[in-house]
Length: 316
Length: 298
Image (cartoon, rainbow over all chains, first blue to last red; front, side, top):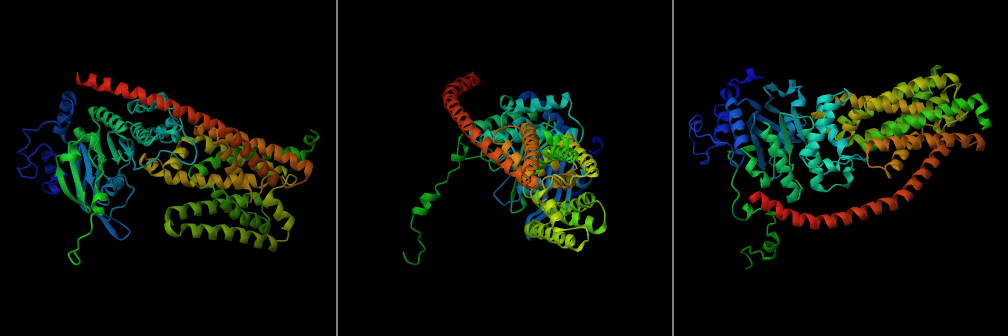
């Protein structure tokens, strides 16, 4: 893998990969300093603890790309959803994929894990083209779900254990595998609910189970599709803490988010998609005004607007 | 217990036990994937296999295994590629299988309507010695797959997309499950009959999950219920001379009703207790949270 630390992606598409790592630490945003100019002042992410920051900064020095996306194109039916997306995630980075509904962010990660076929462009995971990539044990995936339940009752532990199959495959699980499942359960604070049916859980607890399932395989790269959807604030905090611990261990994270929320301090870089194109790649956009308040619940006063008479200018 | 003196009854009861184990063991995965009706479809298609056996002079069990497996694989492929028109394609397969079976069985010299009925609703007197041997081999295969690969099959039926990203051979496992379901149908057709096979795959699971919280326990309980109803239903058919399929399925539904009646108050009480606990919890958490954030700030 280390041999893959070539300048490949940056060489092919000038700036695409280089910009992504450097802009992250450049609060001035797109005011283009050259790719190398920002390097000396490189600071670890805003709120990652000092120890974690050091290792992460060191890891980023190595800068081995874990995810490389070049000019990815995909369509659902006849509608183009991705229209040439470039994205690079380097080892140890936490990258948030943001965007409105239908901007293609979910399609992007699903294409990465092979669930949506690309109509053009290239994908690489750990330096291997996606088509030839077989080391799925290195990837932990959390699909977008509202529930961890299915047609038959299952306990929290049974669902989380399914994530360990990334390592065990068709083999019988051993003591080490059970220990890994225990650790994943503890990390999300669900160890005491291990024997409960997933049917008895709240929305936030379902998401915690799904994260634990993704972590049970002890992945190097964690790909999460809207992990905070329908999660109450207390659970969001638990999830953020779990993620922080995982990142401190050097896990690379790519996650789709609707808004940054309690995860904001963890995010190194935000990539914003708009209509299937990258609209922003750099430091996470700062929440302003109402949006910045903790517990901001994203209720907009549309109702009040609607109450206003519509002034078309024709009749009034 | 004088019925055990008869060799045909011993064979029928042995076959019944194997059906009672295998049908719910496969059925639980179909129910988990919300494909409870798939067993029914395989049963319909298997009838064509039985008829082919009569027509060609081969053992109908083996031709049924072949045709049912083919049909199950076809259903799996329709599920992958069918998308919008998938349900119509499945319906065509189901009805085609049934109609083809009736057509072929009436064309053959050895097939008769009596024969047809015995395959459709089961029969305790027709389980021959070679049938028992075949059923034992097939049941061993089904048990090996459903128990040995239960973690993998659980994963693909729980969340197929996730299972694919773990790197499991999901397509292979899907096909294996389809073939295993087809084999189970042919194991069960002698005792329960092709039209009622699906009930024995689904009803014990539906009954068991009223009272369980885990997949493992649901599996164990549904197999227990399966064996219980196949044994008692087959015995009942010995005394009352009704097709065993009918008595077994009626019994299974009775068990479902009893378990539901018993479990409903239990779950209600459990829910009430949980709600009470949550209320108390909420108060504790409220006070706790203040001190926790206080500590964090210090």
